[in-house]
Length: 133
Image (tube, rainbow, N blue to C red; front, side, top):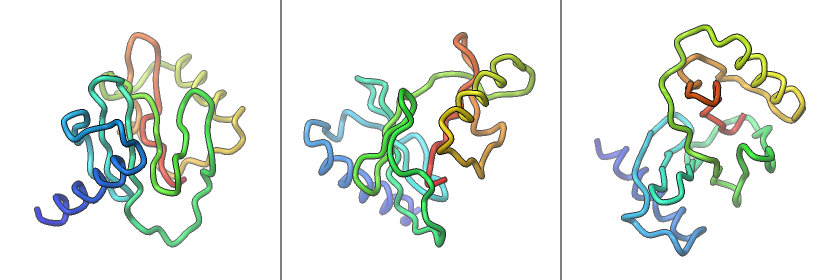
């Protein structure tokens, strides 16, 4: 409804201000969640998550997780858009590899580690919902 449209329009303006070379036709809405709006850049396969919802706790994510996600300004998380199918179980070795990488970062805390935030493709299993956590 109206609120989703307002959030999307506002988030687009934030992306365009931070990245002046991106135009309206370059990005499409992927998701509207509890903490932000997610866009996909069709040309570069880049994902922009605009954190537009106030959360009462302080964010534990401050900077960059090399090769996964980086924070731009105070409101945008930039990462690669990962194509895949929803995770439906199994893939033990890939899950183990992903968890090891997360542990090695030592800066990550996941409060939303759920199957709906994982996708599977021929390269493995990927966590796709980096956010304020």
